[in-house]
Length: 353
Figure 1: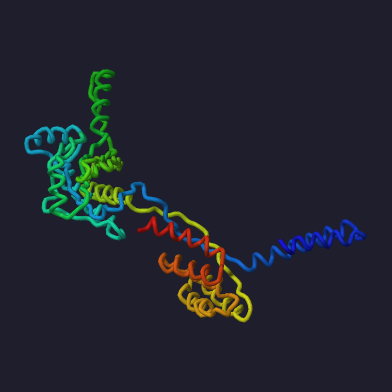
Figure 2: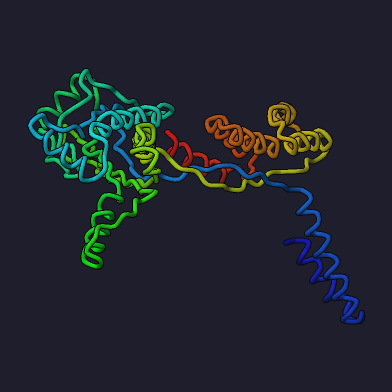
């Protein structure tokens, strides 16, 4: 701003010069300032978290998981009829649904604050169909949570697969009889499989449902070569668990972090060497170079170096160290970019932990 005002004073003082000469000088001055600014800064892109779809209370750390999509013994004859009507292989949903629990376990394996607890009995009887069962008895919910030391209970209420070709074939056969008096001889080559799962999250302390979530998946099979492959159902069940677990975890999007590209004074060359290492993703060596500068309080580049170290640690996935160096940059050297950056890092910590 000071340079900009100086340019204006210069123009006002030399009124005898032509307007064109003044204008040319002013434009050249602005271009020079812009080039200096661009040359002194750079940036890096990295992943930044956004809030999970499902925010759990802070006192919830342990989640027990059970599979309640199984058919009651007295309902198994009806389930067999349903399997025939919908093209489902009898018993396939039962065996595949257990993989949904494995998906939950693997999905939360790297969570900083959530742990999956498996009770001694992971299978409970439900409807075994797409009909959602009544809420689980709260006494049973508390018993499972007490056994496992869990804060909440996650229940797979439904896991059911149907194929479209059975219904479509019936409609086609009826239409053919009406049209020609004869059933159609066409056999469908491929069929679409629809797989539905439904989850509930029970809180035994407040006797409330914290979350309920339905998923629908579609896949195609070759009707002439096989029925619904068990492996396909297992993969979908596993994905169902992984997808549901992701509701508790932050997702990520790309953001830009500005950095200092140039240093000042006697550390200018060393600062440049650190920057060149970031251009080839050698962040550890860049940090080592900038650390020597940042720890030298007499260096004119110390604040910039500390700020760059903070960004480097965020790139490497260490938010705690990034915040430590951002604070040092502002608290010790008054770097204003570092002050704003520290607030961003505090928010990142809140989302990740």
